[in-house]
Amino acid sequence: MSVPSFQQLMLPTLQTIGQRYDEISIGGLEDEVVKTLRISPEERSIMLPSGNQRLISNRLNWASPTSRRRGSSNCRDVAIVAQPIAAGSCSPRG
Image 1 (cartoon, rainbow, N blue to C red):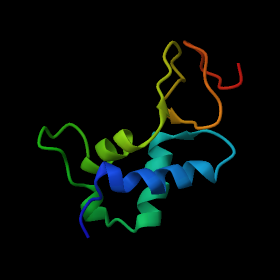
Image 2 (tube, rainbow, N blue to C red):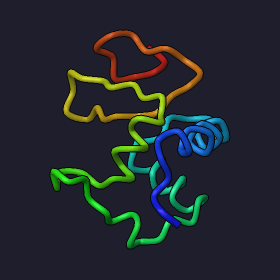
Image 3 (spheres, one colour):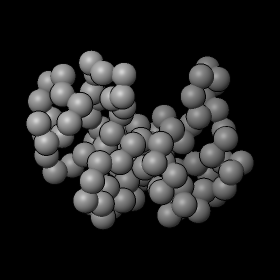
């Protein structure tokens, strides 16, 4: 099996997010999708030609609906489907 394209990752990504009742970090989302699709550690370790990012991480970022939140050291990229976030907020509930 090769690393799925970002189009092939969209449905499993949305299904994973849809099964959750809270936010999930992009790293956590990647772990769950990789396990669901049975992507091997070798495939998961393939890097982009630039060498700056893993291929699966890049494609998953394109496939996932993310909210990039800034302004606090504890903010991170998270995937959230159900609720919009106010600009500059680190809390999806206000």
